[in-house]
Length: 244
Image 1 (cartoon, one colour):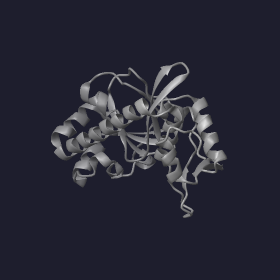
Image 2 (image 1 turned 90 degrees about the vertical axis):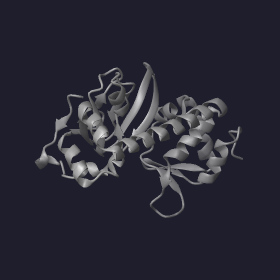
Image 3 (image 1 turned 45 degrees about the vertical axis):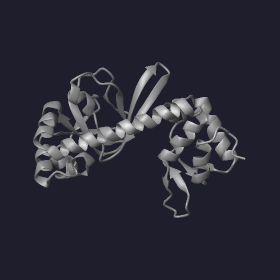
């Protein structure tokens, strides 16, 4: 864990019951969640902090209470492959905790973040003691496998530009203005989208340019507005990069 980490006590932001936000624990009784919560270490991290690195030992599982983290693999000095970006309610680090092998990715905090750190020993005991938690973890792995299958399909059949369109669709959420548009806020960096889509920043720039010239997407402050989501979905399934 980074030296920027600050332990949190009950008087400094650790709210009893906060761990109940985590989806893995949703079927557990409040008493079981509180018991697990009491065995966690609570940590506050500023944006940009390294939580762990590839090849680190599997010492803990982390539950996200506040903030956002990015999980990625550094393939080379200037190439990163983005695996996921998680916010409150998610967890990470469970794979290494299960098999006891070294970490397979790097994780950093994108924003100021509060984590509940659960030691590997406590996590494994909880899985044995609470079948509902173990089943939720199995369902999580099933979802990850399905997503991986979809990624393999897209890498083998779709162009880089098409994969960028799919990432934009995945990241977009309904605009709060109620005008029917979608938005991505904050707007991700080109290198992050390139990592998720398995392509280059040049391809991301070309895809952005195509959508903006066709008035399908525009920038608004620190956000991207998706003006015609259905049209971008259609473009993601066609071989042409020209939306005309």
